[in-house]
Length: 244
Image 1 (tube, rainbow, N blue to C red):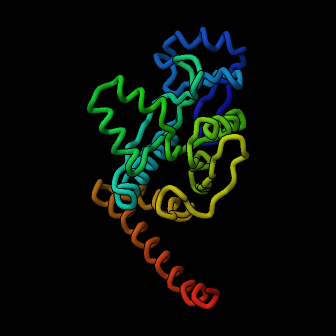
Image 2 (cartoon, rainbow, N blue to C red):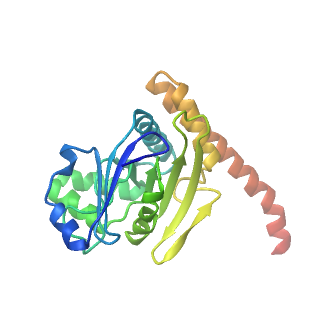
Image 3 (cartoon, rainbow, N blue to C red):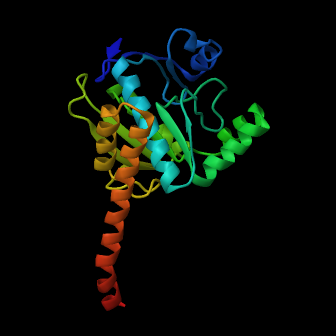
């Protein structure tokens, strides 16, 4: 058993792929809220999230949903959904804290949900997520990053912190199959938001008391980022004209 940096309880077991496939027949979520059965890495990860972990995850879910609605027109969050690569046995896979379709993919997934569970599951199997958010990464979990990349996830946001959550650190990683992740100064999938923008949004939302206040906190940060982007383009325009 291991205690994560945000106070969650994490059990990590090693097993061969065949054993993990057999274990997938068990409904582990009856005993553990978060479960990862990874036949590729040979790991079974059983997690009981702390109150702080769940609080931060809920905040990140709201931040991304509100920002994406303004920047891409649509967002669809998936929590407690197990993601698996093609060829992985049923019941296995990764369970991120938050996962998102953005823009057109979000609308397409909503349409699939209207058709029914089978259509939604088929869409999820063939369509990688645009963004995954993890609020607690431990040494045992580092292998998740490469697995998300293999699944075609475009971008990963990592929120680091301690139990007191006084020093929250946000990191953006670009993912690509067969390549190591690399840090991003700004998001490629969500309007150029920066880690500082997200950290400020998390702090603001935590201090807000109503849904309207929380949404306005995110909207204010999005507007600020848009103005900053316009200024950068205006400053670069004369140089680009001279270069041309």
